Figure 1 (cartoon, rainbow, N blue to C red):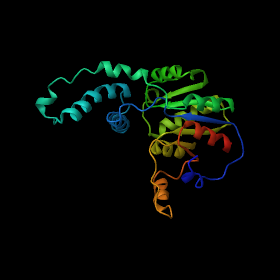
Figure 2: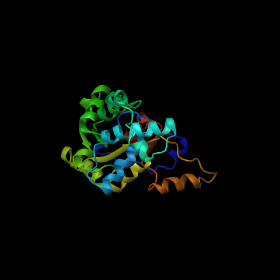
Figure 3: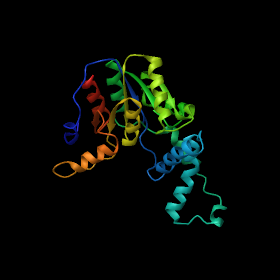
Figure 4: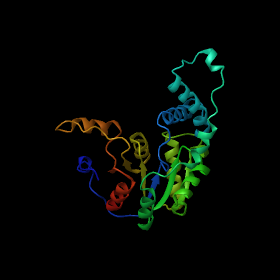
Amino acid sequence: MSSWASDLLPPAKAPGRWFMIGSTLPSETTPCVRPYAQTDIEYLSISRPPPPPISQILTLTLPRALTFALTSTLPTTTFLETPLPDLTPITSKLTELTAAPGLAECFTTISRSGGKIIIVTNGSKGTTEGYAEKAGVRGMVHAVVSCDEVGLAKPHPEVYNAALRACSVADAVGERWFVAAHAWDVCAARKAGFKTGLVLSERPPQGTGDRSQLDTYWDMYGGIPDVVGRDLEEVADGIIKRI
């Protein structure tokens, strides 16, 4: 675990049965495009629920984002009437995304320790199951909770409530853990009642000598997660040490 965060973690609690909720399976998609799709599906969950599948949003967003980025063309009426390029050769590869580094090792560690794994995703259930199959971890996944089935996208509270219900179907007693790579995701999960683990996809600010900036960063997201690590394996190890 990163030394700059480890001393801020709360003390470990007594062992118990538990669940790990993985919110991200594949590695990130195109950096300039994914924020558009993620933002759109989140906002549509509020303004026009249920939102369309994120694959549809991404397919429509990619040509627009790349065209604007590569040509610096402003979105005029004339421009919008011009067909955007067909990027099917690119978007069709979305189902072939590779797993995040250390995912198979993380799932193996969790499963061998008695944990049940549920994946919570803003993507489709079928695509996510395909990612798990390709990564060789499908047999370790107890269930997949997709926002397409919930009718809302993360970070809407109902998605996390659906994840809690999925945990209860599997076991009514165990601890509930939610692991994600974004602070906003674990913030919403904690509010729903999960214990949380954060994989650092973006390093929080170091702060000054008194760590005031770092403390403010965590406070902005509802407090430091129960476990913080640089990768999935580190987070999995941190969870096991706390149960």
